[in-house]
Image 1 (cartoon, rainbow, N blue to C red):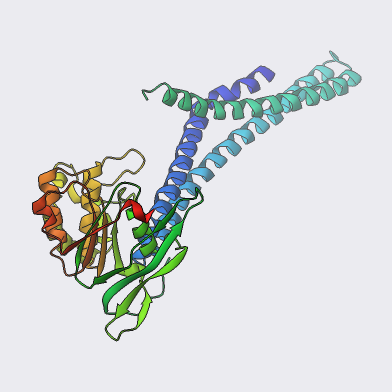
Image 2: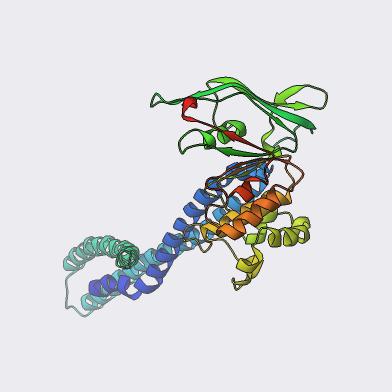
Length: 375
């Protein structure tokens, strides 16, 4: 009987192993969802979509909880079967011993001695058996990990709707811990200007964008917007369209990444998709605009990511658009057409770009050059 109890874990190893693997996979997915949605939190913040962030994490948490509870339930049920089997085994042996006493084959003293031995023995058998269940549980996860290793390698309160007529950058500087200091020239940009921002790598172009966005705090100076009444105020983050060197996408469909989960914007988005040369890319996906972006093992190329974020930015008509090397992963011909589209929008546009042709430079109203003297 003890041997039968010790074999019980093997009888349930498949079901225990499957639920353990499912729990492990769901845990990984839950952690990945937290990471991916948190990575896109700054983008959601600029679009006042904190509720989307909370909703997606709540949904991921619910899915994880269901799988976790199922795993706990199965492990508890297997442990219960082991305990019940132990009770039944002891009752059967006690009954057999009682029959031997009735037939004068065994003394009463021996009965109590055997009973104590049985209870002592089977209590340890149960402990060992439950331990084997946990070992089978963990072994399934370890086997899965080994197989993988063998593979080839917020709602924010709405801000005042300012009508800005210009942006001023004055006495601006930023110090870094490595003793680097960037000093920017005073810059005045009128509403609707199309600005090309150039300069050597490491000169502080992307840093300037982060200062405008409020992601970095200046050491000195100010960046302000001036409204039609001449009043100065901070530039409001949700009034900025930002296309970074490394576009941030959410683990959602392509169309949701463009419309930022607003179904009313879908029709307009389809028109913009063509303008940013994304239509041909989408036709290559089986699910088209409903293709889910997998951020951990990306199914979207760097150029496609840039086009998606470009489409998102143009769709929402932000009054200030910052473009940081946003066509670097796109071929030269399409990059030029995209920049032509961007510079035609009714907004202030500042573009960081390198190695542009003279024809492309003509798309801009003026060029601001940062030099080594600024560092």
